[in-house]
Length: 250
Length: 166
Ligand SMILES: [Zn+2]
Image 1 (tube, each protein chain N blue to C red):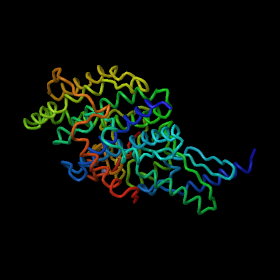
Image 2 (cartoon, helix red, strand yellow):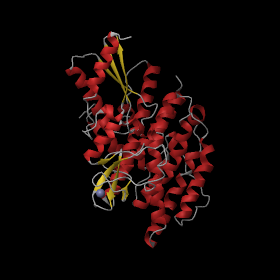
Image 3 (cartoon, each protein chain N blue to C red):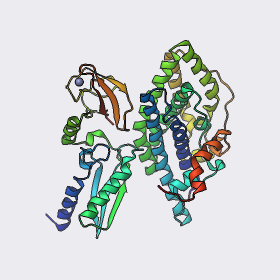
Image 4 (cartoon, protein in one colour):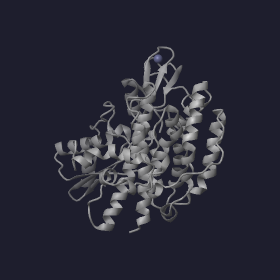
């Protein structure tokens, strides 16, 4: 069995799951009810994507190992930090609303281009999941773009908060377009999406009266399992129940 | 040619028409276009469904309700399969389903095709299901469930859900 394909699918799943988990932290804490509902809806969409990818990865693992031990739940709840292949951006803390919507905007702009490409993937299941999710990601991108514009071109304080968020998150965007070995082997060269992504960011930032960040050192590691300190805390909370009460169901 | 398998398949479709969406109980899964196929493999009945939204939590419940409905009607060997492609679209919702939605107080999806093509949340006017006014506005693109947006009527002031095009 092609282990790079399994790694690749888990990478896609982990990205969606960790973003979903982060956004879900807003549940009951959103700035207004409608936006609380919006961010948790986005979280739910991402969780659905991750489930589809994990189910597929589990199927491939079981086929190759002639077992039935891998499930979507075992992949989400029983892997350790080093096995997670999500990008740095996904695991960054929510911070304030500005940081959350900016993280979503960077991520959705990336996912939009990624899924657009993957919907024609030769692997039919990856293509089907991407085509389905693309419709939802289109909403996420529009929603997050509107928020970046609203806050950037808003009050002095909201503008300042966006600047702080850019300072915080920009360094994690480069990794999205630096392909890991499994991406090159089983996906495609994601660096090809970089220009389109950057142009989208520039267009939205211009409307938001935000400066386009200058070149800076880009952090990398998440895709190959080297994470910032934040992922461990996310997993501790997310995996607590299955770790403490193995096989618990409700 | 009418075969016993045809008759059986037709009977199963009739049963499936009684299964409703747990979140919008006026709609059946047939109205929504969720059931893609019914297959009879020997003594096994296979129902092929497709999710409306990737993360729709109602899908597990819908699958269970299909199973229960078939069990009640004497079928015991039931398999529910889920397919993702082609991706579900609101174009598969029946006209009858759209009418029922409106009566229930949810504005039905406006067709993607034709002159009213979706170009953003306020590019066309969604009709108020209460007073039929087209003078409405989008409050939030995300509503109480993944498939709905929140609107308000500027005339009768009533807030309402819009089942968005997808
Ligand atoms: Zn009205």
